[in-house]
Length: 430
Ligand code: 4AD
Ligand code: MG
Image 1 (cartoon, helix red, strand yellow):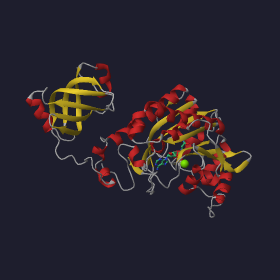
Image 2 (cartoon, helix red, strand yellow):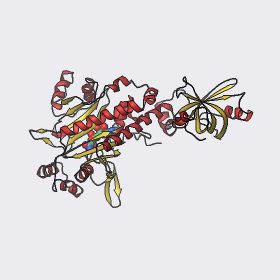
Image 3 (cartoon, protein in one colour):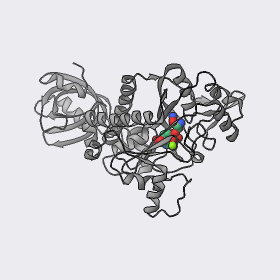
Image 4 (tube, helix red, strand yellow):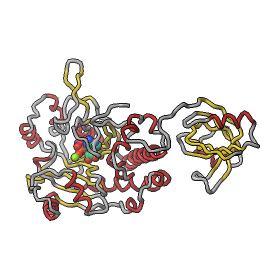
């Protein structure tokens, strides 16, 4: 019977056939141990010289790393095996003998591995990380659907910029100029006025000349937007969402967290509500920590974010940044126009900002003033202003960077391992 490694538990004592690759092989005289993987998991195949035909024994001998085959065998329970099961091989059908697989079990440099990313994905560590990414994706859909959000897909080719013009990817749209989306937010605001609570999940593009451990050129963002929702209510959704992501990974990805050596005691502490610190207090805090140059009105860089986040062992919201360092659409605090009703959520352990969010300007006249100040005179912004003209309501939303969240949950040194094919400042291959 055809099976997958993840489902062999249903066939104990029975015979199954599984399509697999050979990850590794050991032999000791009359036994060959095949470490097999099929994408759903790993299992050890045991080939006993005295129990298989000469032909099958020879085929097992011939197998090299990453050779592909159909293996048939009897499933045995084995408490010592990492998967809990073992396969006593009865026959082998070789699909291909792979020659000179470049990624061997020895150490390789990062650039070498990145050049072979299309193959590196097969390694157990990369496999575990991308399964955790998959769990975060599934938990995202579950969370928002359970809370009555509708998924809306904003366009990727756009005529306007959502987050400022400095890092836009320019392209041509027939005879017109167009850009790859930096954020779907402006469209999600339109969608919130139609559906109330919406979320998007799509790629975002930033032509940022930053070569850091936290920046990708192409990344995936989850952008919820909620009508009749103020800043404070939005923060509650954010902390509940992030707690849910972490709890779902803890519950459903135990073997993967173990495979990458993640200290899960740190993740077990991640439960809403999260602490909040105002930008004002953050400035005082940073000065106390020896950041003498920082002045009220400056934006934070990663050393500042790290210093603040290190003070907490759960994510922390930094709230109400100066109006002048934030985007044109953020609503000023009605009692203090120099700050906006926004927050960045900083992950613990130095992973930096995982969420940026705010209440949006809902007043037509104020938005017109912002258009003047930010020179948004281009007709491509006309529709966004109209959202404030026809039944405007208080509304808020946020964006979570999927790869930043996965890097933190997995405890990785670099964001490049959190996405199958990373686009980095110096890399678009493979
Ligand atoms: O803070 P950002 O720029 O916010 C927005 O785009 C808003 N329009 C979101 C909204 O309110 N709907 O980006 C949101 C998040 C950041 O907190 C970060 O996690 C991630 O997106 N992010 C990046 N991740 C990887 N590489 C990059 N270059 C990133 N830039 C932002
Ligand atoms: Mg931000």
